[in-house]
Length: 244
Ligand code: FPP
Image 1 (tube, rainbow, N blue to C red):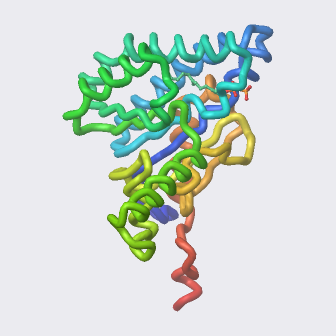
Image 2 (image 1 turned 90 degrees about the vertical axis):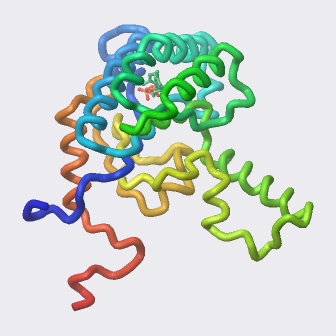
């Protein structure tokens, strides 16, 4: 590790891809145009993460709150998601990417579910980058579902209240088996989590850039990684310097 670097590469990077609408507005274009450009930025980010040897990339593509957007925008995003995965799946498979959908499948349309299931099935044996696409995802909903399942298990006498530990809760989250994100990047300048990976973000490093998602390129990704590598991660402990 070179001088000034406190960390190696993050194993897991999560991205809140924000700013598509503003990107389009600034060009006097409809918001859809920004989402379409957003897909291009996503492809760049996936390739870059994979080439850098990052193990897991999680992207926030559609939140449980996004359903309240104008119906034509929701429909556009659903169609875009469908089309993108149909078009890109073969290349992702060849590049060794393993795709996983994280989110509530119960309210997704059968066509969207079909394409997700195919993408997951086709890439399940790949050993390269794990690409988690958070779609119809909400952190509070994820934790609530886990709590409901635990309550059911206690009610059936399968576990006791004392069996409920952070590790046990972790097994009931969509991200079970993936390490927590080391780095969460948010584009578009807002300083909030927006219901993204609430449980998993406990000790994540946060990096916010004003760059709007459609403009987020390899150089911006590299800067975020450099900023992460220079941080001291303490996980609630005092720093090594203070201890000595
Ligand atoms: C936020 O920008 C972005 C979204 C709600 C959608 C993200 C989707 C993509 C990047 C493309 C599709 C993804 C896949 C997986 C194919 P915003 O609309 O909130 O922008 P604003 O804050 O400027 O209004």
